[in-house]
Length: 427
Image (tube, rainbow, N blue to C red; front, side):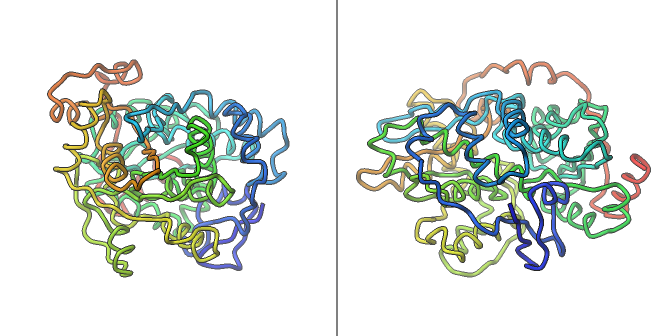
């Protein structure tokens, strides 16, 4: 598999090299030079999740991992399901929160951890990543206890839910957490600066587990196939998928699935008030605003890192731009959507509710909608209870950490402060 840096076409990498590097030169994203078209889609959709995922990933990755390695990686990473639940006559939810940290990022985080542990050949690696909520927990749990890999996770202090934070700041060991006194975009900026600093990049053998890493992105392609496999066959060619979007890795994965031949009619990029992409799709002007804090905090991103990959899919002709629509859902309508879902007997949290709102008001005759449930409602317990007026119970994964102390270190949004902290901690 050959991957090309979208900022510098002379910078190419194999899958293994791209996984280990994370980012390319000039902070460029690696992306496949070619995406094949699968001619056995109907046959694939009849297979079990793990078996199908191995075939999909083999088509994307090629022969860099032998059959035994890829099978072990996928079986370990995807050890839980992704069920589709019907909400009403023509709208379904793909539930991606049945993994150990109750969020969709368990799929990509665990696939990356298993892949990296096999291709690193025991050499030391430092994972540096930023999180707006769920990435931190997924990455922390995926890498916790893996020899020779240290993980440093940056998150915006006071801007993610308490239970989200407890899931990754209480582990200790090889998991190190930093509460940055700013927003998520500042955390992302610190990560990018670190990758441009040879002292840190080379000295600490830096890698990133954000959705910029190609391994996480390709893993997410697999659950789009799983979603379609569970839908009525006669409706599959009229499928509209609404993706709650922050950094846009999830939507990118869906578009890769469509490029492979999966029958998805069109996509909706559903955002909160941080609506850079919906405005861009309407006006043609890329005009990021200051990030606004919302109840759907994992989507509080005004400069989404993965957007260049979507642009590449469109520019190369894999995706018709007409099949993508952007939709902003404000705080009032987010709460209204949560209540509407509850009235239909379905409890959801703000991110999924935004995607539900966007798709339920956009379907045309004959279409069916699928929105992505990216996190368990209990991860946003306080918000969900306040909006719905009913208590919800904590699943075991959250109940076990709710009373534990955070081990996070507070730092200003200063690269010098972060560099010093990492050097003192890891060198």
